[in-house]
Length: 328
Length: 211
Image 1 (cartoon, rainbow over the protein chains, first blue to last red):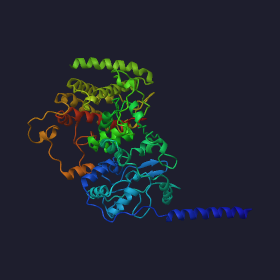
Image 2: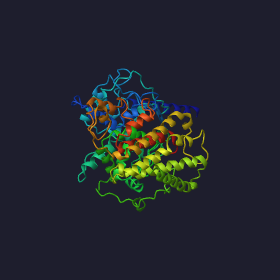
Image 3: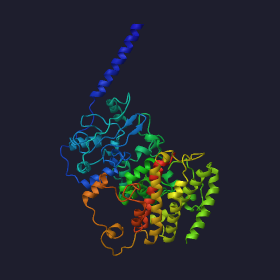
Image 4: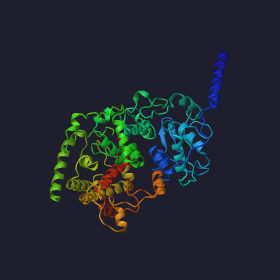
């Protein structure tokens, strides 16, 4: 009997070892073009800002002036604490030794120059459809950033998530590229909004619920997430919920610029940062496009009617919606 | 005008107080909630003008700025005595450990709001005027000097000097007085954005229980 137990345990360990080895050896990532077009740094900088590169990889919470792209504020998640790395062109502390091919593979595929998978806390899935031109633009932009010699600290991730090769399973199950191709019968504005929302702006990363493995739940797209890193909450941004809360294309686009809600209240928490370090840098046209898409995600072209209590203007001292516990 | 504004403010405060009595807050906590609610409602009412959705009303903008200023600065500080967290409150205790920052935001709000009140007659965007040198550059609406491509790239990537006064009300060079002098030459739209920005910056750091 004892022999049997010993055999079972040993074979279990062997199986786990073989499994881990197989995962380790499983090659990931696709080939990358050997040639890229000439990049436009201004377009790349705009895309980098729109994609959240700047807000995530810059530590605005640090004492003194924030060093652009030199590593971000730690993100506390159920899987461990992640520190967005230094992506300035410093040869040792940053990505100064990378080639544009390395960069393309990292951004679009989530694979490091060493062939290792990145943790999905880096929202590469949303960037999968970036064109070669867009990659070249961003690369050109990143090379203008002052190099910072200080490397960001390592992630603090415990077992089993510290075993990076395990992420290959995650990739196989959850890494899906966004749907961004233009749809027939919809306006340019709507398509631009869809592309921004589904791609670079990666709204889903916070506003869609995640399963135990940290994958986005397909059934809960934009339905909100109460369990964001750092204990923050993201409300539903489904069109019917937005309309019910008094959002219109005009005031939603304005909110993405200045951080104000239709009630006159303002965003706090993570969305305040998203606006201050992200959407406030976009063009008015892009903010309007985002609002246009979010309020009509089916592309019907017909605005939803606001509920009656929104249309009749609330009195000056109506505090019925002063629910301090609600999320915004 | 001032008198009318004050009467209006008192009325608003009293009415709001009655409405808020049910929320569970009491004393100074209730008082500051009432103030916050009053500011929120002013912002709500002015916002459609700032989005161009309703016609610009200089008097309403000026009164709104005056009222918000009356809730900011010293008034705001007085409503947050050390450790006042009784009952239902959304104040984050870091207010008192980071009092200087909180206080700077309260002052910035006052400066922006007073600037809005003064600049209201300038319109949403000031009418271009013949001005000389540096002064003209500070006024949106007059053609701004062409920002160089490298400057735009630096700003987008975050390594340029902070843009304007946005969200950096506590920064060294901008004393509230200097800020206000510069800002009262701007269009109301731009100042309104600064007010919203300072509310948001403060709430992000010092308000609990909201996303």
